[in-house]
Image (cartoon, rainbow, N blue to C red; front, side, top):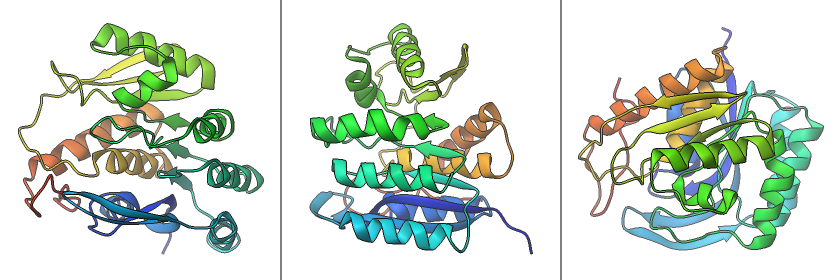
Length: 260
């Protein structure tokens, strides 16, 4: 049986709603074979993160080599990498293994707006990992850091996406879920601007939305779709996973990844 293979390089979420758990569920929902390289172990649930343990970079390197040397992935999705040593090691290995269909979810800012990366880690992300990516998927807070300006409306989203895309020479999906007026996303790259319009869904259970979107895009790219089709279908998948109305935990819960 022939099946597409995908690798997620990210942190673990003990509650299963985000991180590698969300990625693997999304891969499975798209009927691709999922593999994982764990960068950090977190103790968290729907009410928040209690603690984080980062794995040594040599262990991360070993995981990546084991995957590529045996079951070569058709695409790679990266998520949580919280220090410059890990980011540099992952970038180095993806480059040496000539990885393709790379989707980078730049986990830089928490949902509440709290910055998660040091300046050194941000520099490594921008200078070493972003240039390898086919597409990066920042949210509004992350895009503000990357472009150095405030984003509060669609016009400012376009300006920010254009600046980021020009600097990293790739596709950018600027997620508008934190805007008050709408939750439209913007796909920008190769001198193209495509809006992915969506109405706000009245459901607070959106834990892991960013991980799920980037994993769905990676799945679609691995399956042979072009960037626009991959993003449109991924956006629809996430919206329906939210609309399914799964309700777990005492805080903002996860999506229903297998709603289909």
